[in-house]
Image (cartoon, rainbow, N blue to C red; front, side):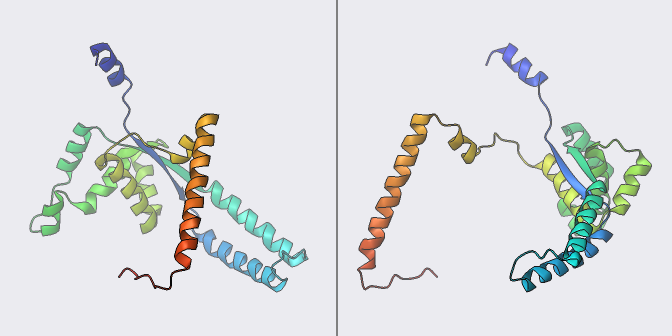
Length: 209
């Protein structure tokens, strides 16, 4: 690789990021589930068809309202991986606790590191230290774990070029797509033919244990 190409790649380097939606009005979830169950029951009573009764419409309108309120109370937290120096310093700031075998295996104190890791990785929204602490306190254990898992994954998992089979198929040229479809049809026909041949056999296939 030409040194200029390398310099250009290094200049364009960016650390991996991800966005995690967090709804801060979890109290609305219970009401939404109750009303949705009631609406489903009304549908079942109407032979599976949505009833146009006043009660059904009122339930539906309240469900939509709750969804909007929950969406408006949802923040989208953008996380970015740390660089290696920031990661090293973070680990050093949260050493294993003395006489704690689990900490020694991990190499850090999980009771304090993950709070700091989440805060260190958040790039949007921009939070003061007080706001960051308030956000962590407002999270459910599940929401905290979701952010912690995402932050850990950004820093400790490899980054490789992804591949989308569906996108690859859709962007094939017409001739290649036709060939793929033809090959697929031939394979299906062969499979069906094999199935018909096997169906005449009286032997019973052995099931895998």
